[in-house]
Every structure is written in structure tokens, then in C-alpha cells.
Length: 201
Image 1 (cartoon, rainbow, N blue to C red):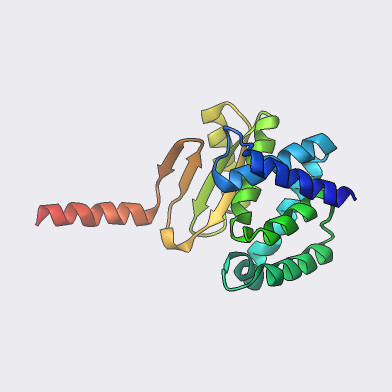
Image 2: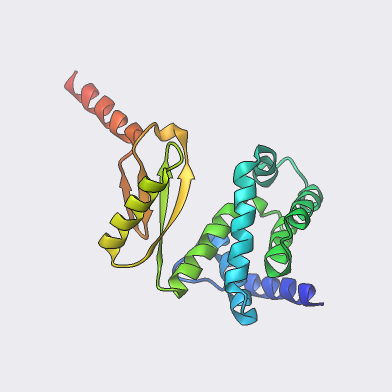
């Protein structure tokens, strides 16, 4: 019964278009709906823990990532497969019901963005801010701590790092913090050099 109530709550909020200024778009609406339900249930932290665990599983499994992103699978196939993953990982309650609802609505491809948006809402509630960081390879603990400290000094807030590994940027990093973005990737620098060389000719 509680699960049905949570799913109904999500449907109502989606129709009403509830959103928050911190997040936007379809993923933001889903994340906001979940955040409101979790706040009402006093489960904000436990839901975040469950979503973080699911995100880690997706990052570790190419097959699971393909299931989430590929439009080839039907809603029924995605729901059955993701339900098996949730059960195996012990993810239930609001987080489990939410992910199943996302699969039923054919929005599983946007789940990573929904999870990131939910994390942003939680961070805002705690007085934190989230920086989206793209790097070509996983950060060492020392580099992670140094970047976190540098951003904290710049913002005056505790900064949560949402790190994405993208080998295509070749080197350096890209940092997006709110509406600000610093692109210090090697790929961008090389493109700038190529553009400058063309103008010289």
C-alpha cells in the first residue's frame, strides 16, 4: 500500500510540474518529486544512499549501463531487469519504487541525471553545493581532496564533487558549478590551437 501511495504521489507531482530552481527539465521534475516524497517520509538521506549505490552499480557494469541508456529495450524488459538489480542490491522503499516508476514511464535513460539532480537538492538543503567535474581518468584521493578544498575556498561552502570520467577530453578537467563552467580540458586547448593555426594560414 505504501509503495502504491509513493508511486501515486510521484504521478501527481509529475502532472503538476513541481520543480525547483536548483534543477530543471524532465529529470529535475522527477528528482524534485522524489525529494518532496523523501522529505515527507523523513527518508532524504536513506534515499540518497540507495540512489548512490545504484549509480555505482551502473558505473561498474557495462551491461547495466546499456540497459539504462538503450532505447532498444521495451519498458517491460527494462522494468524486469532493473527490478532484479534493485532486489539483488537490497534497494527498496521510496528509491526502489521511484526507479521502477521511471522504468515504467520509459525514462530510464535519464536516471543518471535524476540522481544527480536529487543530490543537488539534498546538498542545497544541507547548505552544500555540488560541482560537476569531468576528468579523463579517475582522480586519486590526493587530487580529489585538493580539488574539493580549492572549490570550497572559492565558494565559501562545502562542495560535493560529482565526478564523471570521460577519456575523450584527453587531459585536464572540466568543472561546472552552478551556472559557471571552467573548461581546462586538453581537448579544448588543442581545438583552440587548431583554430588559431587555421587563422594564421
